[in-house]
Structures are given as structure tokens and as C-alpha cells.
Image 1 (cartoon, helix red, strand yellow):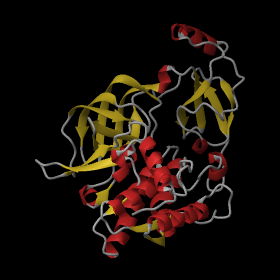
Image 2 (image 1 turned 90 degrees about the horizontal axis):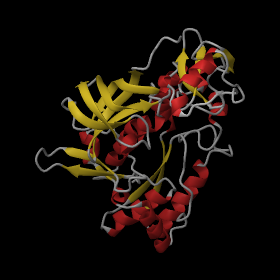
Image 3 (image 1 turned 90 degrees about the vertical axis):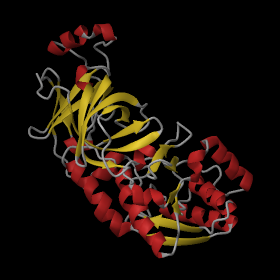
Length: 377
């Protein structure tokens, strides 16, 4: 099982051993080059994982997947950002590293199953005999969104013990067992970036290409450092916080007065025009340019092995979003089209649209486009 040094995987290992499994912990090293950096916790995490393995009484192996990660995940991450999209590398990491490179390694060791500390569940459907990916029982911690690219072969070998628990129960168990990391803070952010400032990290790999920041009426508001460094819906880091709406912009803002939008409302990134190197910003959270009722996704992956039939279901266009009712108009192994009952906020190319039928995660794809107006006024 993947023993990361965190409390979730630690409790997972304990539960599996209590169930009678012979458990071998694997610590995955997926990133190299920043081990001495204050923002990288790989070495600390390994020490914590080793301490957990000692308390539980299991073997721990250190495996380096950094080369695989660089080729399969990080290279794609950079390509997407350079193209102006906002990728989710944690989804690709799960599909390509944790449930492919790591799973293959575990099987070579003679393992029957692999396990991780993800908050999700696996169930075999008694009627179809197919494996289903289910949401974790703790709605605040459910991670099925990040796992939606897993296939039948991967799920058939996978266990998610803490997916059956609430996070509070996991913490209680860790404390009761006496695990050394019982109170360790949950990790946040992209795995290879850690807690470091995101723009500082990108600066190492993507050149700055300054250009204008314009309002929806075409007024120049300021200058951006490069379109790759911004994402749709972004509010902070624009450097135009003190810019007030005026002229045509003020009239547009006043026209939105019924929504409570005023001249001092914050600005949000609404579009990125790669051809003209222009960043378009709008004022007010509810501006029409930030609302979409339709989207198209590409590079789809379906848990069952084939696309679901068109019809009503629910979807998330970003993690921690409530399921939004929608209709699947068409789907295939390469793409799908969704229409939502209510407009979705800041639908972002490069992020994933993940479909659900109740608690069952069906799969999803990478957002390619949405139906907001494409040509600025």
C-alpha cells in the first residue's frame, strides 16, 4: 500500500493489518530537485512513514518514480499551462503513477491488492459484475473526482479502507492507536509544488510574456506577466485591485446593479486570448462572462469501460463543487457534451468535468470549451 507519511494512509495500513492482510508499505518518491527546499516535504514524509510502519509493524520500501512522473505527468502539466489551459496534475498522477507505475510495481512484488488512503470506495456490481467507483462516505473529503480516470483493471486490484469513514473517525483512530503522525496537518496543493508560491514555481519553467489586461469593454486595466500564470475565475494577483469601473465599464456595472455589483467590486479573470496575448477581466462575481450552461470535454475516460448513455445526471467542473444537475447530450471514448440546469461559474479549460449517477462516479474528461461569449466587445 502507498504509505505517504500522512494520517490517512497510516490508518489505512493499520486497518488492513487488523483485517488480516500481510501489508507492505511503499513510499513513493515522485519528485526530485527540491529536496533541500523549505517547501518540499519528501524527506520529512519518509521519516513519518517509517515511524508509522514501525508502530504498526509492517515493512516499508522506498521506491523512486520520479522519472515516470516527469515524463507522464509533469511534462503534460507544462504543455497545458503553456497552451493557456489550467491542468489538474493530481488526476494524471493518480492515473499514470499511483494506479499504473505503482500498481505494476506492487503486482511484480506478488501483491494481490494495492491500497491508498483516498476517500473513495470500490464496489462490484452484482448484476453486471463490473467494478464501480463510489464517493467516499465523508462528503467533505470525497476524492472520487481525482480518481475518475481509473479503469476496471485498476479498480479490481484496489482497496480504499478510509473511504468508509469520516475524517474525524480517522483522526480518532490515529490518536487511539498512538500513531506518531496522528495530528499531522493534511497536505495541500499540487504534489510537486507543495506549499511554495505557485507563480514562483512556474517562473522556473515558463518564460514571462507580458501583455495587456483589458476589461469587457476594451479598457486597458494594467499588464499581466504571462497568460500561463492566470486561471479563469482568479481574483488575487491581478494587480488591478484599486482600479474602479468608469465610462463604458461603469455603465456595464450599473446595468448589473440588480445583482448587487458596484464600481468597487473585485475583478476576476474571465478569458485568455492567446493570439493577442490579452487577459480579459470583468468586475463582479456574477458577471455573464463567468457563467456557462454548456461545455465540451475531450480525452474522456469512463470507469465502466464505455461511455454512459445520454440523459440526466450530475457533474462537477472543479473539486469541492456540489454536484450540478446536467444532461449528457453525447459521449464517446474521446469526448462528451454537457448542458447544465443552472449556469456554472468559471468553467475552466484544462480542468476536468466529472460525471456522477448518485454516489457512483462514471468518469469524465478534460474541459475543452464552454458556451460563454467568445468575442469581446
